[in-house]
Amino acid sequence: MKKTLRFSILSMLLMLCGTAFADEVTISAADMQNAATEATTVNGITFLAEKNNGSTAPTFNANAGDFRIYAKGTLTVSAEQNITKMVFNISTQGKKRLAPITASVGAIAEQAAGDETVTWSGEATGIVLTVGDKANYGSDGESKAGQFDFESVTITLGEGAVVETKAAKPVITPNGGSFADQQEVTITAAAGAKIFYALNDAAFGEYTAPFVLTETTTVKAYAYDETKDVKQSETVEATFTKQSVVTATCQDVINGQDGVVYQVKGKCTNILNTTYGNWDLEDETGTIRIYGTLDAEGNTKNFASLGIEVGDIVTVQGPRKDYNGTIELTDVTVISIEKGSTPGPNPEEVVVGTCQDVINGTDGTIFQVKGKCIEILNTTYGNWDLQDETGTIRIYGTLDAEGNTKNFASLGIEVGDIVTVKGPKKTYGETIELTDVTVISIEKGSGPVPEIEEISVGKALQIIDGLADGAKTEKEYDVTGYIVNIKEISPKVGDEGYGNATYEINDEAGVLEDALTVYRGYYLNNEYFTAEDQIAIGDKVVVRGKLQRYVKNGEMTPEVAQGNYIVEKGTATAISHLNAEAESGIIYNLQGQRVMQATKGLYIMGGKKLLKK
Image 1 (cartoon, rainbow, N blue to C red):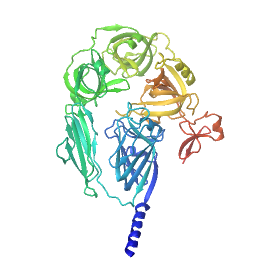
Image 2 (cartoon, helix red, strand yellow):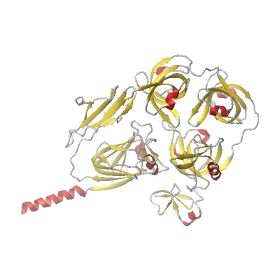
Image 3 (spheres, rainbow, N blue to C red):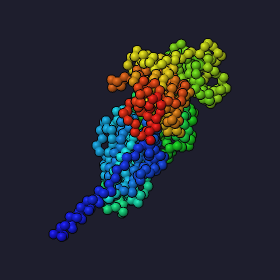
């Protein structure tokens, strides 16, 4: 009897000890915002977000109030106690781009389209979450790059639980995929653990350094940690597929599919970045962008060592990617270089035409066009807009009298001058260009500069209502409005980010209904966005661009089309005109949505910004 009683009391004590120290804490994205650049500890829990093998670094978006980790990025969460559960509250942007999330230990609850949370469960003191490549579960669909954007995370700790510790699974980076020529693979594990790996069906051996694959291979790995109760982790694996190479022309690549590896021979016509090796390749069928060039050892950021120059005939091999309408081969391997040859369109075959002829023409065709300089965008390289009675085209790069670049000022071209130029056509995204043009003649100050019509958002919507689905206006407008919602800002920092922003404007500040979307526009004077705080909700802006009736999946979005930019901007001081309701104490969030009660954060009340702490 006594033994039974003692056992029962001991069991109850163990049960109580197993739950007495359980704790739950909610941490906002703002609290952990520094984790984008360094390990940040909040309430005893440490966060670190890293770009890993992705192309965009993690960031805290102050306008949206969410933490954003992009495709292939990771979030490491650790604590001294066991973490047993994490629930991430997905932000508005996150719901659009939600990717599959994988965990180094424990399990992610089954994900589905429309999820508002991502839940992890398990028992560990450290977890690495990896963001998938595509937005499989986001409303934007898997054609978009994946993201993991959340406003807060609620974490459950169970310090007193009786837990059998297990070695954490290692992480294979990248986690499989296809490659053209060779693929370097790295395997990591928790500090102090050894890693063992095998290729295909070979025996396991200890991992000591990254290795290179040259054929289709399945990599398997497990970790061994002497400090854990269960010392050997589960085995993970990733399959790497070497793709066959398609020998093709530039037009074949343009008509091809993303991910397919092409080998193309053509002329280097323009070098955009001499570190990473971003340049344009042209043959008799068209032009494609080379985005990233590997050196002779297969390394990046060493383009200069190859000695490629404009005019060289180069054979390259790499996978295709459609980047916002620009067709690219990425991280190419150089097969051969022939110095100073001149294939492609015959430079003597010049088509004398109008701006509309250029717009309707074929990339690579050399046009001679006469028109008015209506705006100068870059006074070093000579980027400017030329307009005649049929339309407007962009001049991207102007050679001086000696045929040199970066000396535009020596030509003395001014807004209002009538200029005749000659150069090859290129379609860059939605912009029709003549590149590295030769100036044939300049007629000073002929005629007035065409005025761009200034309109309101309401007027812009009326114009768009009159367009056919998918159509855009032939001319540009200056649209004035207040920023009422910011969907995405991608600052250009070095070679990272796109330098554009997507946001909504309206005639009345704070009103989302009947707003006009400004799609992937640039900052003042057509410059890149370089920081997320360059625009804010409530700013009054004048945006220059063509209007478009964009239709996708049966839904119409009125837009200022891609290629637009801000010509004037006022600083937000207060969001006003929230109707007469604002005067009666009604509260709105920064997206212009009415809320019943302000909690923590920034709100609008009575037309003023209110910070609730």
